[in-house]
Image: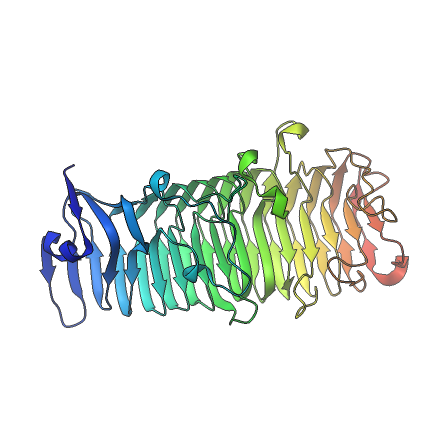
Length: 430
């Protein structure tokens, strides 16, 4: 391919085709590599397409800007071209933003940035070597990201660990979105996630479906501070690898499907992950929703999972929620380093799950001095997590549980949880 080195003012001159229509103008990018030294601004009602011969937008070594492409207004489509973020030249080692600062006002050198937009489509783009996020969408509606490929992206913090960047982030109350049929490989941070500040509106009405993740330093998927999100039929392998990029100093244990903030009326259905160096599903802040038909399986030697953890974990870090009314049905957890399901709260149905080859770490670990069996139990009914919330009023039935000492640690009650406080029946332990 030929290479064009252009400033923002010359981008329009490099365009080969621009034709107007009553609804949307179409801009075809030139063939070859176009180096950008500053942001390319795309206004509303615009469709930007790559050349049939191939187009690469590459960040120049001295690139200055929030993202290679910054979208304004409504009705923008970006499709069929490549973004090379030139990470080696542009990576800045930094931690997470302050708790009162959105990522869109903190992280630079992203691939695509869209703020306060409506009706955005990002289709069949390829991103690689992006220092920030491949796609960062903030305070927007009706967003579709479909068929994109993201590889070798994300930056590190001063300790050399991931700082959460590299994938696709939807934040600050973004609504009516979907991320589908996309592919993520060698991402230092999270693959696809939603995030909002505690004081901001929650993200809502989203779908994360049919995506594939491999070699992720943090989470494959995280649903953060959200309402009505469907996470369905995603798959992946080697979550939490390489271990050297895991931000363990911040206790950011990798998770195949993670949760944060206050998340309700959401569902995690039919997802399949193998080789997870962390947790399968973390339900911190999740309530009034479904976790059904998911699979996580580890087949390697136990010492290959430096940050191996529980299969499914409930937590209640967010003060506005209580862990309640979760249906955990027909999931399969194979080879978890610790236990199968950690339970707090009330109204849960935990049934027909297959929790196999558990406690591969042979843990009798006294994580809490007065709860020595917490980490090494098949299903543990706890007294609380970040806040007290004893496991009472739940139904635990028809689960198959196997693994190290599961004949005696199959279903364990924390001190203070009375035997009749929950319905426990028909479980098979060996």
